[in-house]
Every structure is written in structure tokens, then in C-alpha cells.
Amino acid sequence: MADVHDQTVEATTTFDTKYHGQYEVKELEHADVPAQSPALDEEEVEPELHARTWITLAAFFLLNYTQVVALQGPSAVLNYIGTDLHNTEAQTWVVVVLSLVQAVLGPIISTASDTFQARKLLLVGSCVIAFVGACIAPDSSSIYRLIGANILIGVGFASVPLAYAVPSEIVPRRWRP
Image (tube, rainbow, N blue to C red):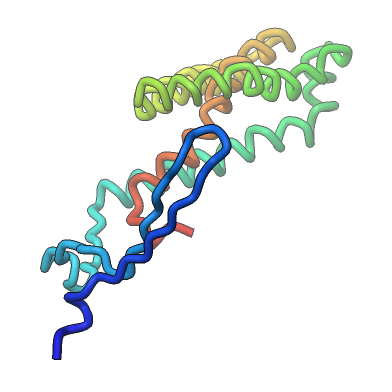
């Protein structure tokens, strides 16, 4: 008796189309598929994460936490900031400028990151600029200097999409949510 897998059954159908003439369609019940490599049949190996990966993940979690505090913190004490810096009329710009800079630079940084594959450079560069702004902000003697410092901090906020993309690339696929 012949093996069932060695036989190929073909059904042929011919049909006419209105514009392109006749076509013949064959239906195959058996397709020749090359054998899989032995490496694919082995059990999945547990990925090994090094200290560098854990430090990077911790840095991203700290970055996200810092960005939440920097966004929510000033709005809670905005009246005190305006009063202490003697300009209550411009105090709303302290918070608004963070979102404006993020809205303008966020798509540009994300597109540049995808186009040039420079996630690390753009992320570290924008965080360094934000760090400079964070160093300027506490010593502000006028509301406008604080707004300028928040503009620099907003450059770091523009890298938020990268802060979510990079950990998904360094963590093994099955550990991702």
C-alpha cells in the first residue's frame, strides 16, 4: 500500500475572466515542505539577562518616575511659585511650556529615532539637556528663568516615546507584557 503523504492530489479548475482571458487554478492537498532544523525542535532556552540590562531597565523606570514628578509637581504648588518669584501672571507658563515643547519635539525625535536608528543618542542627548534645565530651575530668581529651564526639561519630556520603546527591545520577547 502506498504512503498517503507521497501522493499529491490536484484538482484543476479553469475559469474565464472578463478582461484577462483564461486562468487555471490548481488546488494542492500536499505541499513539499523542507524539514525543520534540529535547533528549532529543542526546548526554548531561558534568556540570560546581564547586570547591564537590569541597570538599563532601572534607569528607564527612574526616568519615567522623574518625568511624572516633574510634570505633576509644579502644578501642585504653582501659586506659591508665582508669588515667590513675584509674577503671578506668567506662572501658568511654568507648567504649560513642558507640554508645548513635548508636543513640538516629540514627533520629530521619534521619527528621527526610527529613521536613523539613533535611539540611544537621542535619548541620552535629550536627557542631558533636561538635566541642564533641572540644574538651572532651582536657582531661578525670576519666573522667566524658570520657564526657560522648563523648556530645557521639556526637551527631555520629548523623549518619552523612546523611553517606552527601548525597554521592549532589550527584554526577551516572552517577558514583555
